Amino acid sequence: QKEVEQDPGPLSVPEGAIVSLNCTYSNSAFQYFMWYRQYSRKGPELLMYTYSSGNKEDGRFTAQVDKSSKYISLFIRDSQPSDSATYLCAMSAGSGGSNYKLTFGKGTLLTVNP
Amino acid sequence: NAGVTQTPKFQVLKTGQSMTLQCAQDMNHNSMYWYRQDPGMGLRLIYYSASEGTTDKGEVPNGYNVSRLNKREFSLRLESAAPSQTSVYFCASSWTEYNEQFFGPGTRLTVL
Picture 1 (cartoon, chains in turn yellow, brown):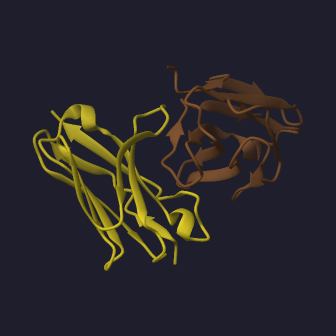
Picture 2 (cartoon, rainbow over the protein chains, first blue to last red):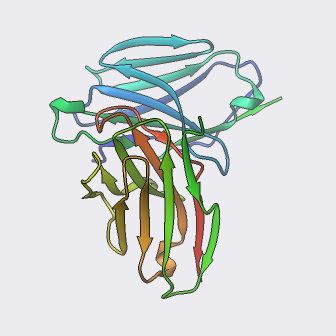
């Protein structure tokens, strides 16, 4: 079983839709969770950063972590064509775990159609 | 504040040639990383430097060497390039090895 699983998509939605992106993981030591956005031919850009379980909201973006289910989500409200990109989840155990480096999902390609 | 910068942006090599990819960060971060990104494989860690003066192997270190020149700069060297090293290479940095990482714009390398 891979440490981090992420559906590669592609996911295509109309402008204004609510988008849900998800990752599952197997390492119960993970406690830091990140979402990166990567535009075509660009470097990954940090979008959201959360610690442990719960929700975090930033504008149209909401990151949700459910450690009991080993499941994280990123919701995008009122999606825009400019949100079209690949979204990567990443996680680490932090200083309390043996694997403190980031483990990335392979990314989900999202297209928002005008 | 440029963040993480990488040079060159593009490079074409012939098999057996050598080259060095340069990375610099101006965020006073302690930790730096080199990744490669290939279609269907995601980001894979090549080498990292948790702090100035230390380097460690990541997931795919074979065929690469690194140098942490100072706190700002971390270079990746291909001694004898192979077609399997055709990829997009990203440098990243973080405050410590436990923190979120910030990425550079990438270097697209083709080995013929």
